[in-house]
Length: 216
Image (cartoon, rainbow, N blue to C red; front, side, top):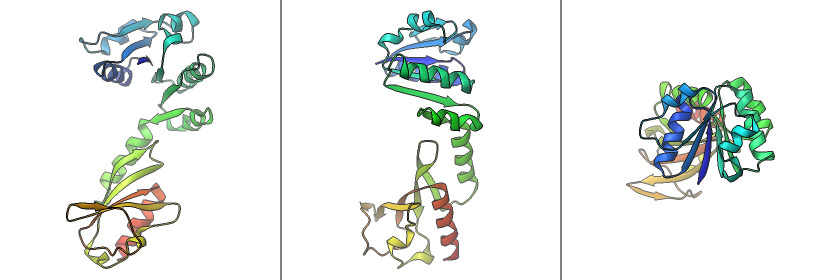
């Protein structure tokens, strides 16, 4: 797959190298030549120095033959413009942007772009690790708007219905594991202490469940 990475800071260099190691054909664009020093010595992809909004720079990067593009500079405005041009002018099917300042995220989403906000996701993940130990996030979709959580059923919930963990539109049980065997949720299942339950939930839904668990 032909992939362009715009921006060769710490994130861009790491992303480009990971993609290169997976055998993709990677081109990195940055307006500062010294930025390419962030790439590991064994990176043998293509590098293009120049202002990414110039058509000749994009042409040298091979944008006409590109399958995917990631805009990961530390400028949210530049990332948004580059991604928009890539999708609407060059019709690149898979475009992802880095959100640097969480206050800018709404503008990226307004363009209908796939957004990765490391600040928002990282803060949410640290909050989870610093708070309740009963429930842990094991997968986060988007930028944390929905996640899959793992819950070890406490003793106080022995005999309660599995459906008692559900909250409409906010928290939904997706699987239960007992004695090493996983099963799909069913209304008649009664919980046993130390069951492992996986739930798909919003941050609000998981917060509400944590409060209910504390009540017993």
